[in-house]
Image (cartoon, rainbow, N blue to C red; front, side, top):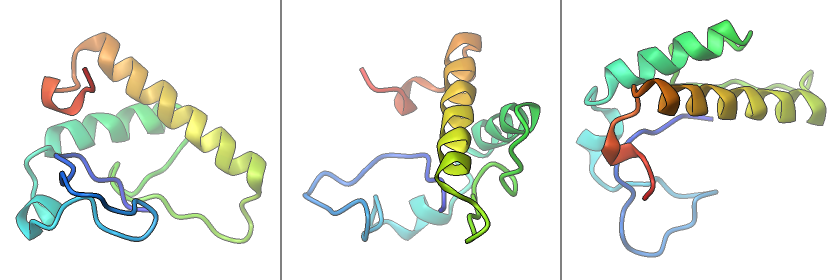
Length: 94
């Protein structure tokens, strides 16, 4: 799973199979590098190694409970970033 921080394309798209943007620069850019680094810190503090805050690797050794726990830790990390003000306004939903 690859974490993408940025604008999502406006047309109808299938999030399970298509990229959230058709702009290559947006997909590979470093515009939100500081935010990704902060997310990585929060995840590490919660026991999740995410390869720099941008990539999550799951294998057959990870069961449903592991995935649910990781998602909860991601949610906790994002909420902490909102609380501390390190999430830019353009990445927050209104």
